[in-house]
Length: 72
Image 1 (spheres, rainbow, N blue to C red):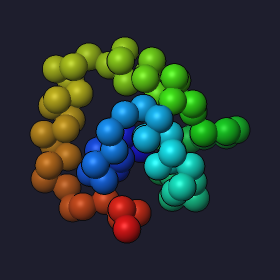
Image 2: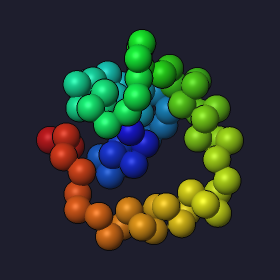
Image 3: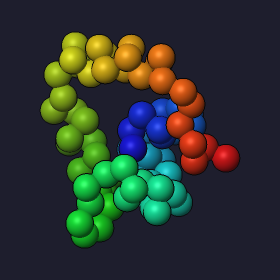
């Protein structure tokens, strides 16, 4: 969800949550979300807890991936 949102130029946690809601079917197809979508605060806490070095490594890998669909 975060990677797709970043590719679509989101500008904050609320924007990322709005993006996930707008693309809920697509978001749920790639995430294990049994109940509701995470709130902007939850997204912030989870992504803030990630190891930045590991996250940067994953982001560099993502630069080789094809563009994510759902960014119309």
